[in-house]
Image (cartoon, rainbow, N blue to C red):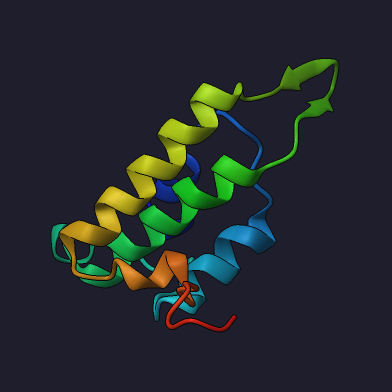
Length: 108
């Protein structure tokens, strides 16, 4: 099994191959890389898993070959929470949220 196949196995949703390649390469892995125990436990692979969960939480509902794939709002929240939990585990909690906005001071 390679990295892309493992990421694809997270869900039956038809994740495009280009998306899996982009996620893998974005974290420093090759989508075609053989998945060893060492790779499976690496921060890069865990980060790729998290980003896949988060991508799924935002994926559109689709119909492909008369089979529909859709997520309820509850499922989307669980997918995002799972992705964020993985990022927290490896110490990357800021990767998802990006910029934090807030109010400081008297004038806005």
